[in-house]
Image 1: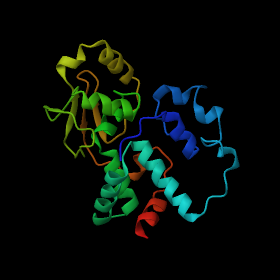
Image 2: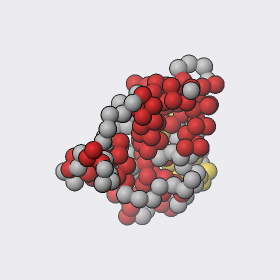
Image 3: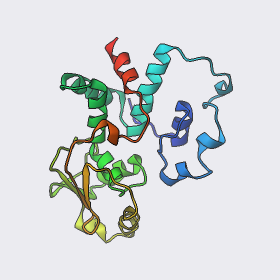
Image 4: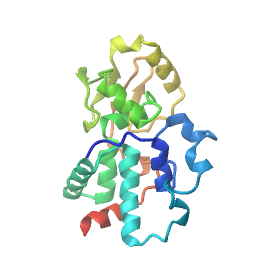
Length: 208
């Protein structure tokens, strides 16, 4: 299935919550979720009560859209999380948090994960000193993500690096603002995920 290329705000409206897909716009009075509380479509205002499967499906779609992951890839993450020791739902969120595009976003060098993916695909970053252009790479403890030296001089990255100085970064990342880089010093834990997921619903959905 092709990646969704329509309006990002429609995805937030469909889930009925802010997924922060548009960066600063989501924090302004222009946010579509704040202005229009109904789901997209002509029947949005007549939304019926959601049953158990619907709740599970919506939670899965919320997680997928929040991290920008397609169904096949998301399911592969779930299978990996299920085979890993520990709580499956928490393992799944840990894997998603370790994606390269999420690291770039958490560093404060992108206003959204969508922008982070675009910047990575354009090869503006290095991973452990090597050029990288795959947003879905799962990083591990000890990995260092940095802006390429050539890219640091662009007006775009000058603005991003300046903005990142005030960004709140997670404790599992050691950010070097001066060099526009970050080192993953620990695996993210459930408490480090700042979105109110009900991951158990996702586990129940895939366990059927």
